[in-house]
Length: 78
Image 1: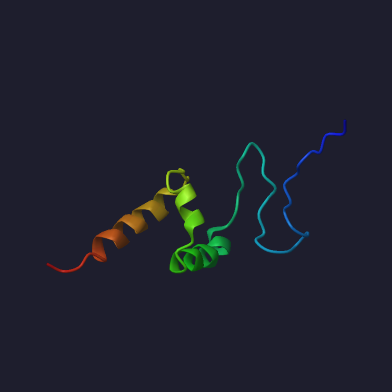
Image 2 (image 1 turned 30 degrees about the vertical axis):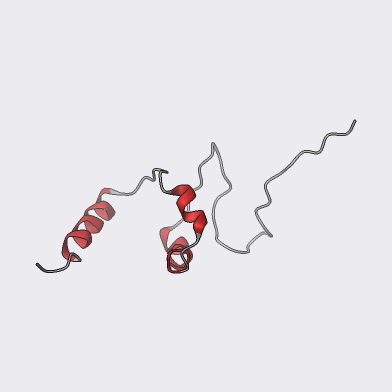
């Protein structure tokens, strides 16, 4: 009996988002490359985003501080 082995298709070389190939279930990518894609997915209310809600990401301390400041100052005035 012949077994079919499934492989992950990453698309043609040089097309789409320029990410490094996954190693140990992680991928390094520049935020600037995924911002437009994530923003479009949020605007379009894509259901697949909910699949990743509980995933943790690692960001630099300075980006985290900027995000916290943005969160604080975007609150509506009382």
